[in-house]
Length: 286
Image (tube, rainbow, N blue to C red; front, side):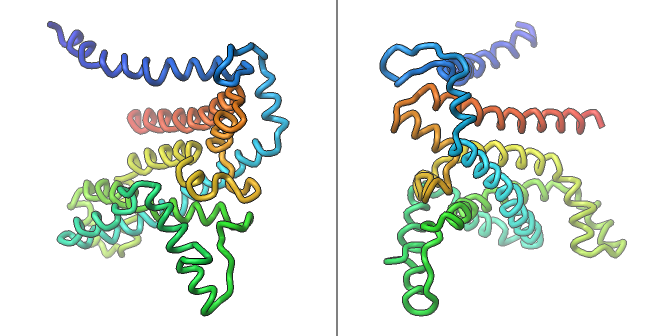
C-alpha cells in the first residue's frame, strides 16, 4: 500500500465523524435559520425574516455587545495573569508540578460545582462570604443582582476557573525556550522583564496566538457559567448569543430564530479561525 493510501486510510475515520457530527448538523442549522419552525411540526421557508427580526431586536444587539465585552475581558485579564504566573513558575523547577496541579483544580471541577461554590458560599448575600462581610463590616449587595456588575461578576467566576489552564499551557511553551538563549540574555545583563520580552515571549508567540484565537472562539460560545449563575439576567445584563439561542429553542420554541443566532455565533468564530490560519501561514513563510 502506498504512503498516500495510508494517509487516506488514517484520515477517513476522522473525516467521516466530522461530516456526521459537525457538517450535517451545521447544514441543517443553516437550513433551519431560513424557516419558521417550532421543532415539532413541519418547517416553512420564510427567507431572511428570522435575520431581519433579529437585527431589529434590541436584546440581540445587547447579547452581541455582552459577547464582545466578554471576549475583551478574557483576551486581557486571564491572559496577563497566566503569563505572569507561568513566568514565575519557570524559576520553581522542583515545585512547579505542585503549583500546576493546584492551578488546574478549578478547571477540572465541573462547572456546576464551581457555580454552586460561588453562588452559595462566596457571593450569596444570605449564606455566603459576601453576606458575612455585609452583615458585620461593609454593607453591600451581591454583584450578581446588579445589572451594572453582573457581567463582571460572572466573568470573575469564569476567569477563576480558566486562568490555571492558560498558565499550564504557557508554562509548557516557556519551558521550550532554549536554555542558551536565556543564559546569553542574563550574561549580557538583561533583567527579568527584558528576558521575558526579548527572549521568552518571541518563543511562545505561536502558542500565544493559538490561545488568543481559541479564547475568542470560546468567548462567543460561552454558555455554561452564564446560564448556571444568572440565566442571562438581571434585566438581560448577562445575556449572550448562546443563552439567547437557547431561550429561542427551548423556551419559546422558535427553532428558526435560534438557528439564525447560532449562525451569527459561528460567523464570529469563523473570523477568528481565518485570522489564526493567516497568522500560521505567515509564520511558516517567514
